[in-house]
Length: 120
Image (cartoon, rainbow, N blue to C red; front, top):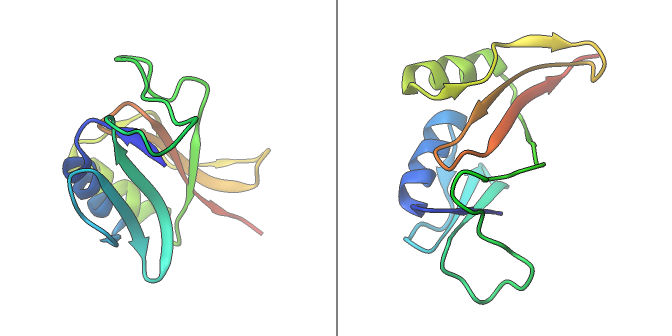
């Protein structure tokens, strides 16, 4: 679950990037879905019901964290990210050590997400 400034805006961003759908909707909490599978959850910065969940300080979103999100078609996600004007940190490439095809992008709250597909 990511703590975000604007749940609705982040939801739209992730839905467009991942070709996903809303599983909950709202200004406080969202579930980003692919069919019946939960890809990730978003929560507004103002919360009390989740002990241990911390809102990142401005400019320090996800310090020390890199989310990996699997995709069937990495190139299609990259094309959507490019069209969206997303903050691309690299281009799709083969990561020989991880044996996967991947690229990394930052979301509107500054979280880095590597979109990947495992290779045989």
